[in-house]
Each structure stands twice: as C-alpha cells, then as structure tokens.
Length: 385
Length: 131
Image 1: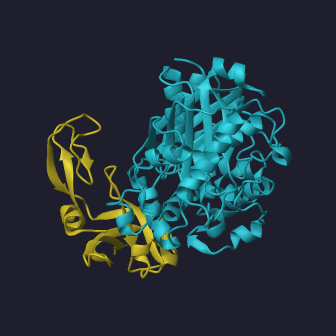
Image 2: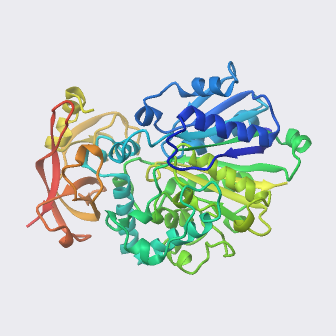
Image 3: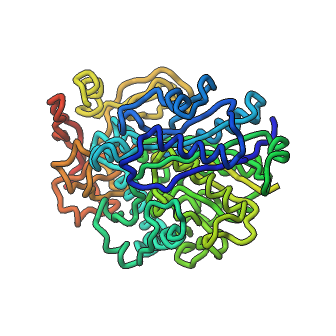
C-alpha cells in the first residue's frame, strides 16, 4: 500500500444557495480544490451524496458531475452512506491512490437541499433511518437524537446546559469562518429557549438544512513531496465501521460503537492514540452527537463528554479543540458534503491557514463523519510530515 | 410513497408482531431475517413478541416529516420487551409530560398514518401505559 497525501482542498460559502444548482455547487468546489492542488487533470473521482434523488430528482450523479467538471471519460463513482457519504468518498479515494490504481484522485461531496421544502427535506433525511421500523412510526432525525440525549442524561447526568454549550462553542468558532452558513454567535439562553424540535432537542441544538459542496485532491505521498508548496499533509489513518441503522436495536444507545471501532482502526493505522490528536472535526449534527462522539473517539471517558464541553476542554485553546470550523452546527450540513468539508478544515488547520480560529501548533488532526444515528462512521487522521 | 405491496409485506410484523426465532441458538429477531448474526443459522420458527415492556427512552416530536404533518406533536419511545428485544413505537393515551423512562407499557394495534398519494391506511403498533 502506498502512502497518500492531500494536496488540495476546495469549498464555497455554504447556505441556502437558491441561485446555484447541484452540478454548479460541485464543480465550483472541485475547481477550487484542483486549483489549490495545482493539477489540471484527474485519474478518477468519487462523489459523496446522500440523496440527490429525493432532494433534486437527479441520479446517475457521478457521470453528470464528471461531465460538468470537464473530465469525461475519467472513471467516476457516487458513494452513499447517508450523512457520512463524504467521508466514505474520501476513503474510496484514499484506497484508490493507496492501491496504486490511480495517481491523482478527486474526492468530493455535495448536497443540494433547498429545492424542496422543510417537511420534504425532513422526509428525505429520515430515509437514513430504518424506513419500515423507525420512520414508519413517525420518528425523525432530531427525534432519534432526542432519544439518545434523554438516555445519556438519565445514565450519566448530562444536562441541557452542557448540550447547549456545544452550540455556543461551535457558533463562537464558526463566527470567523468565511465559509459558514451561520457565522454568528449564540448565547446559552438562546439555545435553551429556542423552538422545541423533539424534546429535549431545540432548534439551536440542530445543524441546519444547507446547500453546499466540498472537494479534496489526493495523490501518492512521494508525488506530494514534489508538488506541495506548503506543508505536506499525509493521510495517516483511515477507519470505517458499521452498526445497526435502527437505533433501538443497539444494546447501549448512548455509545456510538461504529465511531469507536472506526477510530480504533484509524489510530492503529496511524500508530497513535487519542492523546496524540491536536484537534478534531466531528459530526455534531445535533449537540448531543458531539458529546457522544468525543466519548467514542476516546477523548473522554464514557459519560464525561458533557462535563468536558462545560469545562471548556473542547474549545479552541482547550485540551482537545473540537470543531474549530464551527462544525455542522454553524458551518452548515449539506449531508453528502460534510465529510469532505471536515477534511478541508483539517488541511487548512495543518497549513496554519485558519486565521482567528487557528489552533496553535496543529500537526495532527482527526475528522469523524457518521451516517444516521451512527449506523456508519468514518474516521480519518491527517498529519504534517 | 407507500404502495400496497410495500405495505402488505410488513403486515405480519405490524399487525401481529411476528418475529423469527433462530432454530439453532434461540435468538429472536424483529423483524425476521434470513441469517442469525449470533450463530449464522438459517432456520427460523415464527414466534410472537411479548406486548408488554418498559420505556428505554422517549421524545416528543414537534417537527415531523411531511407524512406525519397532521399528527404533531406526538411522543415516540424505545420499548424494551425483555430478552434483548426492543422496538420503537409512538406513545399514546397519556399526557407526554407524564412519560418516564422505565414506565411499563403495552403495545396495541392502532392506525398510524394515512398515506396521501396512494391512499393506503397504515396500521401498526403503538405503546400505551400498561395498567
């Protein structure tokens, strides 16, 4: 297996981008990544997208996007794993380069979510749960995470305030991110008093509906050493795992086992442990998710994630900064794009290019992306070599 | 869209709570599946789930998906039926404020939704407080 490096990343400012189509969103970010990498050709491409069919009526996406990017007849594949489709695309690209099949691989993620109204978007997102035994009974994604939240509160004493603190922190971080959909700060009171979505989850505990795309260019490490103008960034570890997509089928709904298993694999490949990670971008689709994920990644013991955010351990400048980009919460969550956007932030942090939200001496970063309530998880570790 | 075949296929589970018990190791699956994840057995016998259980966790959904727009707000919970069997169901016939983790519940046959486009009336199980 060859060592692999990321040599370029691209994104645009996310939001409700009514003037931009699915294909334009993707091509814009892909071109930004290719320009950043300094490449004018690619050998293959992988696109993460959860549900272009339900959101825009468009399938057969990979070929369409390769066409509009002007790279036909390059091989292109769309991969889907709900909200971690982007992270999965990144892993597919990593495997393609590592195996020696391709030298220059573009990985991207995209979701165009505002061509349908809110209820239809909620319906589309709910297809990431078990259609026959979860969604059929009326449960939504905020509802499923509310079940996790209430069980976590009962088992570990996690509080509403601790959950709200995740939103406050991530909006603080995202307030200086030029690509964020909601680059503003929120107060604890605002989060605690926001409109109820699924008790105990309120509106400001939720990541938004977003249009957006992100992309990255992967090449063999040896090639990157010749091409990179700045720090060479190696993909040191990649882990991928699954679990039941039905939340109720799990023994402990407060622990995201697929993330724990994916992390274990990524740590092993990179030869490091949770203590060696300088910062992480994690899947905070809801505030409780970030708390559970920081436990599954081994940053904190089971049940201590809430107390950790309350104590400021996950803030920029804290013990292990989490979501310096603002996370899904402030940056936005175009589901298929999120996993690749996390890579975008990790790369820019490792380059020291994040301005006010820059983490000092960031040498090794982790990205964790998950589908549904943790039915699938991807963990990647990137480091400066 | 919920078409008649898609709905009809799940009737044994939704109406009668039919599960599959592995003939080799005895593990019970709801809904039934074709291979046992514990012993890899492929022979199953049909058994019926118990209707009594306890709440593992619950929520009240205020912003539903488009097909449940008329129902909100409604409570949903995970019910532990014992023997490592859990099920997700709406919680009805009680004040949502009185729902508690650990409370005893019973599964009953109820109407769940009316599918607008196909006109299929959808039935299934809902949890009510056990008395």
